[in-house]
Amino acid sequence: MYIHEAQDWPHFLWRDERLIAPLGSLRQRLGRLQGQLDALGLLPQAETTLASLTQDALRSAEIEGETLELQQVRSSVARRLGIEIADPVPASREVEGMVDLTLDAVRHCHEPVTQERLLAWQASLFPTGRSGLFRIRTGAWRDDAHGPMQVISGGFGRERVHFQAPAAERLPGEMRRFLAWFEADSDLDPILHAAIAHLWFLTLHPFDDGNGRIARALTDLRLSRMDGGTVRCYSLSAAILAERKEYYRVLEFTQGGTMEITAWLEWFLGCLDRALERAEETIRDVLRRHAFWQRQAGIVFNERQRKLLTLLLEGFEGKLTSGKWAKLARCSSDTALRDLQALVERGILERDDGGGRSTGYRIVEA
Image (cartoon, rainbow, N blue to C red):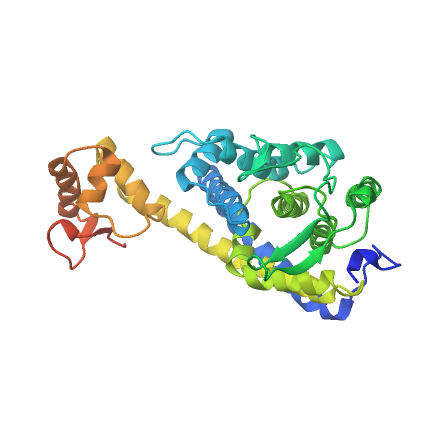
């Protein structure tokens, strides 16, 4: 029996004594983060928000097996936030839809969540009306025309059903009840509210596709209301992706059990704590980048060199060689090498132990 088939659905139960300590720890970490954010200037705060929202959009899609291009996502988020970045690129319709969802949930967190808003979110994720090769219903609840909504793994002939959602005919009433609960005044701790909303929405699985991404957006919206909806400094989706296997395991365990959901809440609190821990690293990276540019305040860089340094500071993947830089800057190999050598001579970059064209370059740490 699935949890939504229980007679007392959706009256969730949990053991408060097992949640007091992790909730207290979360509150302390949130307080420290808020203090760090308050100490930042406006530009570092904006860069922290840009980094976190970019990670949210990228990783929430990746959890579902969809890989979005980093620069497209970052450029789309930056444009909407009014932040100038080096070398912005146009974004695909799919990227724009994912960014639409991510930013609407966080930046407009105090607007009510309605059926119309959820339908618009789901439609934005699938601008062509297709998920991969398959046509799906968009902007509407699923209708189960092709059978019950199931979460399945395994190849053909070895399929395993992990979960089966409520029948489509139940969805109108179930979603009205969920949305009324989500928007009602409550004494429930906002973090627990976010955790329960995530589980409840995924259990209903109201769409043909996009349920996971929208569940995470709803969670971010509820947490943003708690934070005041100002500066965004952490990505829950990035933390979930890092422990995706356990995420699905605890979901399956909870959805196949009773109304007692303490195990889910404990996991959620731990995952959020790890997201906040990563946020502290994000803030340190932002401060490191600003300190770097302050040290170089009196130095004149050409446009290519400034772009190169920005890429390295923001976490260039792999080893930056003169060949890679020539392709990125769309210049000759000789020009790329001169850019790099000039920065080495100024003590800004250093070479690794390689030789020739395979030589890598990195920023000299202060």
